[in-house]
Each structure stands twice: as C-alpha cells, then as structure tokens.
Image (tube, rainbow, N blue to C red):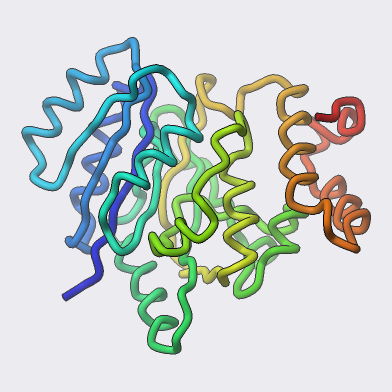
Length: 267
C-alpha cells in the first residue's frame, strides 16, 4: 500500500484559479491522496466553487476559517487537519505542472526511507504568467541543494523549495508554521525543517508558480525587509557564524527590491 499524501491548500479570493489547481491534483498518477482547502473568509465566490468541487471529487474537502487569519495560519491549519502520513501544500492560485509531480517526489522519499532517513523531496518550480503560460524554470544546477541545506537556505544561496513533500511527523517535530509571520513564512519553515531533515531534488518539473499582481510577492519593499530581518534573526541569533551568514544573505538578496534598504528596518 502506498503511503497517504495530504495536500493542503490555503485560499483567499482565488476563485478564478481553484478549478485549475484542484484539477491538476486530480490527474496525478499517485492516487493515495486527500485534498483539503482551508478558505480564509474569501469575499469572492470561492465557497461556491469549493462546494462544486466537493461534489465532483471524492477525496476533496474544504473548511472555512472563523475569521481572516492570513496565509501562514491558514496553511498551518490545513496541514494539521490532514490525517495522512505525508503532507504538502500548494497555494490555490498555483497548479501542478506535470502529472508525475507527487509520484516523482514519493519515489525519492521511499528511496531514502529504505535507508532509515526521513527526507524532504522537491521538484522544479515553473514560473508562469497570470494565464498559466510558461515563463522560466526557477531551479538550475547552480542554485539547487541536496542533503544538508540549512546554510544554503538561511542565506538564500539555494532556491528555497516550494510545494515539497515531507512527513507529518517532521511537520509536528518543528511545530508547523510560525503563524506570527506575515511574509516569508515558508522560508522560515524550510530553514527550521532543514535543521532536522535533508532535502533532495527530483531533477524534474513540479508545480507552476503563477505571477500576478495580487500575490504576496507584490508587497512593498519595506515589508520584505522587515520580515527578512525577522526570519534571519530568529533562526541565527545563537549561531557563532551569524555575521558570516548575514553577509552571504545580503549578497544573495534581489538588489532591485532589498539590498540598499536592508539595514533601514529592524524588528
């Protein structure tokens, strides 16, 4: 029996993308999956779409937050509600780019599990425009990390994996997402996960990240600076090589958004 996979999907006002997102999961070659959407009190017609999808797909469910909490809380809640052995998360405006995405990553997890290791598996990130048309791949041989990735992740020397698969046990071991974080919550999560688990890359395409002006990446520069400082300091304060890591981080930040502002704002 193949291990069960839970797919957590936070949603807020992404009704126009929900069917494509869920449809891309339903066509996966790996079938022992459950899909759970947590809606963060959307004001569009998301709930209507989710009700239709719940009738259409057998292993699909959704719940609604009592109030709007933000993406970190909503993603964390979705994963905690899943009762599967392994979990992953995808935002509702993104979609799986290939039908083999989960199969490829679980094959890698199984390989290392036979060696007594619980690892995190991830695939390439396909950047698309708002219509889902290909723009570029994010991960290359120059920015991927296999094995122990803590230093690469905290300094952003490697591309931070998104939509990766990991065991629910690992998620619980680091107590999930830090729901206080308003931006870069996934970076913080992957840094903490890299302290206790190794990451391995499938060398295959995985999911599509949709670029549009409603996403979190469109937030103002000062917010990016604020949360980058917070996440870095939170995960490096007790390290002897903190200032060396800090120099590496600044070198790797996007100069158009952050570099010249980085020391102006602290938390």
